Amino acid sequence: MDRSANRALDHNPVAAEDVLSGSRLLRRAFLEAPQRTAARETIILSPELRGPPVLLLRRGLAYRSTTLANGARAIVDVFLTGDIVGIEHAVAARAAFELWAADVVTYSFLSPGKLCQLMANPEIALGIMALTAEQQRWREQHIVALTRLNARGRIAAFVLEIYDRLRQHQLVTGSSFILPLTQEQIADHLGLTMVHVSRTLRRLREERLVLVDRQVIIIIDLAGLRRIAAGDADPFDETAGAGLVETSSEMPARDGDVPLSPQ
Amino acid sequence: MDRSANRALDHNPVAAEDVLSGSRLLRRAFLEAPQRTAARETIILSPELRGPPVLLLRRGLAYRSTTLANGARAIVDVFLTGDIVGIEHAVAARAAFELWAADVVTYSFLSPGKLCQLMANPEIALGIMALTAEQQRWREQHIVALTRLNARGRIAAFVLEIYDRLRQHQLVTGSSFILPLTQEQIADHLGLTMVHVSRTLRRLREERLVLVDRQVIIIIDLAGLRRIAAGDADPFDETAGAGLVETSSEMPARDGDVPLSPQ
DNA sequence: CGGCTTTTTGATGTCCGTCAATCAGTGTGG
DNA sequence: CCACACTGATTGACGGACATCAAAAAGCCG
Image (cartoon, rainbow over all chains, first blue to last red; front, top):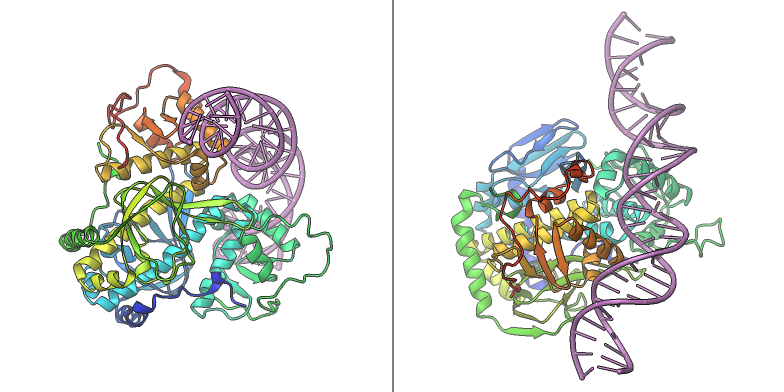
């Protein structure tokens, strides 16, 4: 029983072949590109830099963020191992936001010029387009969550997003994984405060939906999380029969699975 | 004195030439494409449709939205006359959201297959990429607003976004314009309720920042709006000296300018 | 004028932010 | 080994921004 949320973007059949081989060519180009490492909590790219490169994350987690005039930080998006970051630098003269390493990050990079050359290959151009489309989808889901979900729903949606993306990259098989973000960073991504994230995580734990302890995330009730992330009304009425969890139709999802790091 | 917010995305010099001619070629293709009209408050594209076309809005305003399980609606983004909608349909098999006409909308459209053909031209591929990058920027700003601005800031940012985009398309010259959205639609875009939007607009009017009456928007204090949209703390302390507005450094910005419709 | 949508306004409640203190985990150095 | 510092998480008390509910007013259109 597959839900749309965790299925990979399916492609237009007209373009499917070219998209696939284009993506492959693009990744191959990255594999031959120079490689670097950034320490935890350091800036990888800043908007000051002109002609920023395009990155492929080989290991670790990074995020793009900005700081407002009042000092508040907004984490616009999160990138996992295997993600390509800043594809728009092929045409944009500078990055729109700062790119930070959440933990130790290894990445390889291509100059914008090199990227433009690659795009001369129509297959690669299509592959890039598909990549962009997919990142756009995650971002759009994030917008929906920010627009119409409360703290509980946003956190559920966020956990599921990371979960689905890790699975898509085959970086996780069980129902638990490592997320190297502090609660403050999660808060800055979801438009909440650290304090409220902490409280909401406790609630989700008490409801036996998901367990977040430090950087270890264990999904207990996947189907329940999906319902919440989809904006179902709070289960104040339907929790009349407390006790047993009866919902996990999508997957057995028990804790005790091997936690896999996103590396 | 130009602020970054209202400057068009500047391009990587390596690609600038190709981007420009690519954009021109893409628009030309649309001008030769078939054309349709959609009535106010009707669906233009739905996720059910397989192989949705890519659209160029020739006239009117459209928005992409989804409805959650609890009935709440989220308007993910807004498209103005001159915008290209659904470029990702070149590779995605279906639209991610419904596309609605906010008022009478005229558009021309290309099939995904045709788009893929066009992308074989590297200049067009670059042009499309630049287009995508620009739309992404607006969306990212929207995310920042949703994440870290209150109702006042979100509305300010939204008004400015529309204003800047209209100017970029040379659809507005003065400081007033027409925005064919109801307050409920604005609320669904900004993650607020209609009621609170109404109240906040009154406050912005009383502060002599912007005047929103029905669909007519008159920007009174452009610089002030920009400050609020950038997340400056509420001016509770600095309003000690009430009375005169002294801020408009960016533009004279007086009401009485000719209101231009976004057509 | 009647019926509709859209906006406005008031009263009341709640989700979430703010402030502040405590606690747990991690590392450091004497 | 144990103070010490430091970062991150937790909890409580309290206030405020925003939601909800409800009703009325204002536009708009046939």
